[in-house]
Image (cartoon, rainbow, N blue to C red; front, side, top):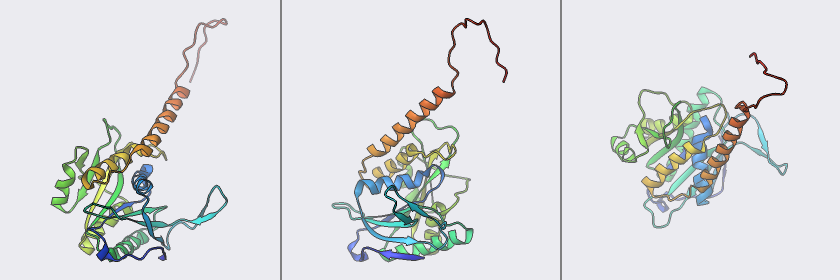
Length: 256
């Protein structure tokens, strides 16, 4: 793993630091949640990490500037709060099974230097029928932590399922190999094609807001939700057959 450092951190200067991770996955739910927090709190960047098994491509922005895909690590020093927050957002996930494990462990080894006590991964749970606000399915080996999260009205326990990719590996390896509490939050999403789901991301941020007093403004996610809803309604109008009045040419038959 290559690394570019921006900020030197002394763990003694941090207050009960927790880590919140968001990797791109179904509906970009986890990544959008973490990016929304970053956009709100304007944290200081600690480092950029470049895993050796990320897809071999660069992204060229609107100004024609190429940038490598990477993992970005930020520190949110919170005044008058019980915890500081380290935020980690990914542009991609490692490509092979072996590298998923290798990088998950390398990342945990890297963030251990900050004296972290909790790793939270944000992800999605494909749910065909969603009633009301998307629920957040919670899984952790720590019973007290589970009780804390299940006290939230949006939270339900996640049972009898599989979590693919780094959003599952990172918190579980943190717990099983490094003795650091890990938890995965999976917001309900219909998982339709490549469509992003900021509504599911909003549910995750709401849970984190309430349990850790983050007070993250949700208006940007609300704007994304409104845009998608407008696009959905426009698409429905396009595919819904128009009502037709009587034709001067007489009745017509359609065969499909």
